[in-house]
Length: 252
Image (cartoon, rainbow, N blue to C red; front, side, top):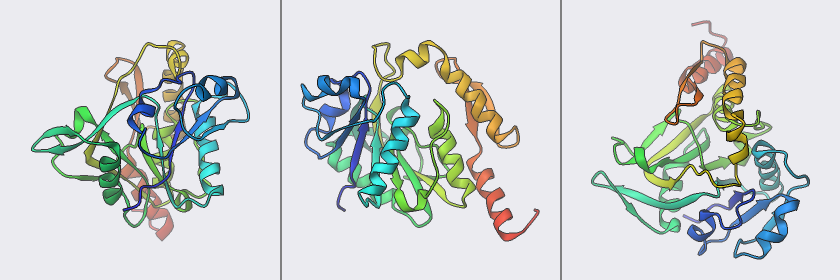
């Protein structure tokens, strides 16, 4: 399968790990005007510049949505700038493989009817997955989007917008699919760049509250995450079933 176009939104990390990982693939780097010079001094490929500085990741992701549609892309990838490796699960172990091999394997899982958004799985969870595919799943960090099916949906909120977008997809009677046995590794870093300043200001916790308020207690819940920070989880299958009932004029 031909690999889908890849976008890497990046801020303040011209040495981001993803650039080394993807060095043998074509991709587009999306940066702020204030960072353009620093990125052009590196090996980052095909740099395009956002119109404005310091508007946040949500703004950058919506820019990528618009650019991909303007280019006529059907499916495309949006990959974080801090992905250090990719691999495939074999006998409950993640075996590192070239990015091209892993991306191709993931595409074959994700490209299903009625799927508007998909993703790979975090390495720390992939090895224990019992099936290669999971529907109604969260999609983070290494995400594939079907431009036509996503339609006019937009990322909302400064952070946690990835979880919200998957909810919006399900609210349109479409689904997400995660390729469970294709894995990626990244590492939450205290280094400057990326979302470092937002996490320092605990904007992630405020965004979790905003997403919870948008969806309500019936389909969202708040709980601490692995870094002991307040997070939000959405019931994607429940949102999907609600949407089907509305579409079909059913109350139960």
